[in-house]
Length: 488
RNA sequence: GGCGCUAUCGUCUAGUGGCCUAGGACGUCGCCCUCUCAAGGCGAAAACACGGGUUCGACUCCCGUUAGCGCUACCA
Image (tube, rainbow, N blue to C red; front, side, top):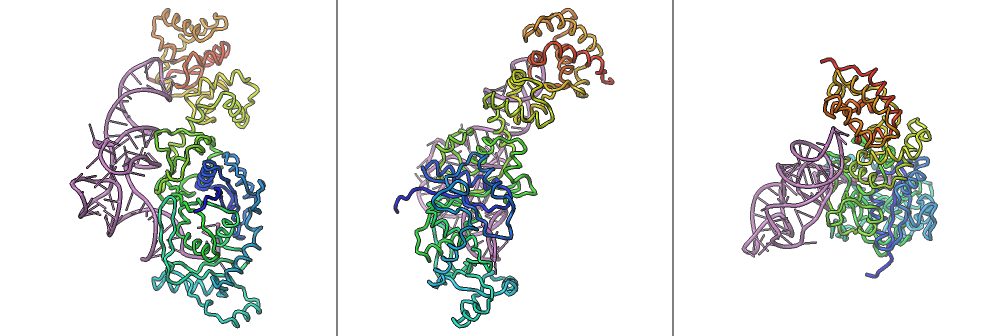
C-alpha cells in the first residue's frame, strides 16, 4: 500500500447542536491528524432537507472552536477540496450516480413509498429481512424510458452483487465480513435529487482524498455498502476505524432523556473545555500508563488509534467533575480571575466592587475547594456579601449561650489591632480565649459562623484577613444581634 | 427476527500465555493531618459473564452459551 498523506474528516449532520459523542469523534479525528502530521477536514452532511435546522452549521463550528479543535479545511476555513457542504455538491453526486447507472452498478427505481412500505410490512410479517424486492431491476429499457418521459419520480438504487462476501479491515476491530445476501439495494439518490449518506460520503471521501475514515460504531453495519461502492467506482478504499459508542449509565446509547448530550449543555454548566476534552479522550482510549490528566497538546502527542478500545464506554459524570476540579485548580490566577469576574457579572454582582487584589485572595483561599467557577459564589458567598442567614445546623452545633458574649469580647480585641494579618488575628484570639478561660474552639467556631454564616471553608484567619478588620467586626456585631442559641 | 460488534472492580481502564496474590483512576468507606470544609497522606471493600476446549500453564488463543449494544429508511 502506498503511503498517502493522512487526511481525516469529521462529518456531522447539522441537527442543531454538537453531541458529546460527536465531539469525541471529532477529537479522535483531530488527534489522529495531529499525530500523523495530517489534515483535519470538517464536512457538513446536510443532504436531508427535512432535517434542515437554521443556524446549526454556525453553532457546530462555534462549538468545535470552543473545544479547541481547529480544522484545516472546511466551511469558512477554505481548502482545495471544497465546497465542504454537501448540499452544495449535488451535481457531483448526480454525475457519479450516472456513472454507476452506466456501469450497471445501479438502477432507477420508480416504486412509490407506499408500495415500499407495504412490501416491508409483508416481509416483516413473514419474518424476512426487510429488503427491496428488485421489481424495478427487471424493468425493460422501454419501460424505463416511458416512466422517465411521463415524469414519474424515481430514486437511484445500488445494485448489490448477488452472492459475494464483502470484507474489510477495521483498524480497531480487525477483519469484519458481511455477505452481500443481507445487504439491501440501498437508495443512492433520493427522489428529491439529493444523495443519501452512503453515496455522498463515498464520493466525498474519495474526492477529498480522505485516508482514514474514523467514525462511530453505528456505521459499521453500513460499511460493506460503502466498500461495494468503492469497488464499483474502481477507487482505492480509505482505512476504516469504527469507534466504540458512548453510553448512558444503563448502557444504552447515550441519549437525551438520561442526561445532557449537547456539548453546549456542559459548557453552560460550567465545565471547562480542558476537562471535557480530557474526559472524552479517556472514554475509549488510554495512554497505556497511569497518567490521567492531559491537555489537548499532550493528547496530540500521545494519541494512537491502536490504543482505542472496542467496547462502549459509559459517560460517567463523577469523573468529569473530578477532572474539572483538576484542570480548574491548575489554571493560572489571571485566568481564574477573568472567569470569576465574568461569573460575578452574570450573577448580577459588580466585579469592580471587589477589586482584583481582593478577588485574587479569594481565589487563593478557595483554590482547593472549588470544582467549578460557580462554586466561588455557591461555596463561599460570604466573600461577596455579608451572610444574611446562618446555617441552623451549625448554630445548633457551635453556638453556645455564652458565644455572643465571647464574640463581643473578641470584637473589642480585634478593634485594637492595627492592620492585623493572619498571625495577629490568631494571637489575639488565643489571648482572648485564655483570658476567658475557654478553648480556642469556643471562639473559632462561633466566629466562623458569624463572619461566614456557614461551617466550612478556608482557614478562619485567612477569611478574616480577606474580609478585613472593619468588615469582620461589623459581621461579629450583626451575628451577636441575630444568632439566637438553638433551642436545647 | 436477521446480520454485525462487544464482554476485567459500581464507572473509566491496565493486561497481548507464565511478571496476576489481576495494577491504576473516579466514586464509596475508614484512619491520619486539622479551627471547619477541602486538598494531601495511608488503608479497605470492590472485577477477569458462563461452559467447553488448546496448552506443562490461561484474564490473555479457539468454539459455544448468555447478556448488552448497533444496524436493519427516499435519516445521518
